[in-house]
Length: 329
Image 1 (tube, helix red, strand yellow):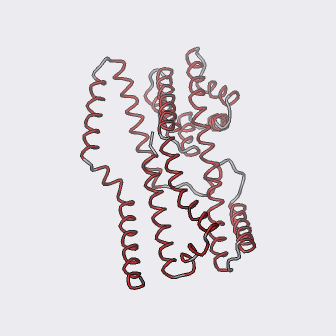
Image 2 (cartoon, rainbow, N blue to C red):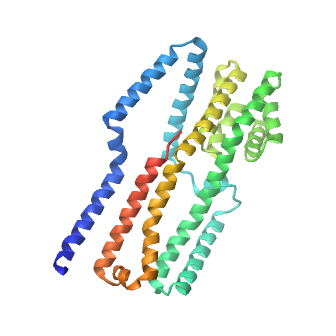
């Protein structure tokens, strides 16, 4: 058995590298698949047929396509310029300075070091490695959680705010007065963002430029759509109430589609969670029932390599499943 150990280790390492390469280049393979190209052609043909329907539908579709193209350009530029730490803290609605954030990182690392050292019996070097990872990762995850939660709330409330603006414009109120109503009566965080727009306009900034700063504070597609509509109306004119009504419809349709995708992918997400958790539960059960059987993975060099390879495989499988069940709306 010992003579086959090097071969098995080599086979495991080679398979790990191949799976890692497949995980990295999987989107390119899928994008070039003939079936997907055929679906894109059918979708484009269907969209073209719908655009040839009536004049009103064609014009609305044109507005939606313009918004989508502008959003794609803004998203591409946003990928190149990542938000700074101060911007991320502001988007998470945390009144932290950079010094406070770094202090939280140090406290998290020290707490993790003491917990690992006192509860697991590991040496100082593994405990130090865990503490460094926790100090860098935990505050980052907390800030991202706060950002995502605030962005979801903004997305859910923006359509209602646009409807308020539409009704105000239809009855003859100025656009700034409609924004003031939203800044007074809407829910957070839409209320705070519209209040900033009104304050910028009060200080002398044009309303289009003040609204154009909204996607910088809330970098999501819906905020970009709203800023683009206001900027287009301020530069080219036209029926603002109709444009905002179309925008409200687009926002609500996107929200409905997002909820539909979430419902349809719930089963796949549950299956992925169960599949990812089974190896951990099986390893824990073996450690409790027959610790000598599984101890070879921790006490021998070959076992350590096998354990590391299994961890890499699980990570790659989780990444693949995440790509399969996540959809961009």
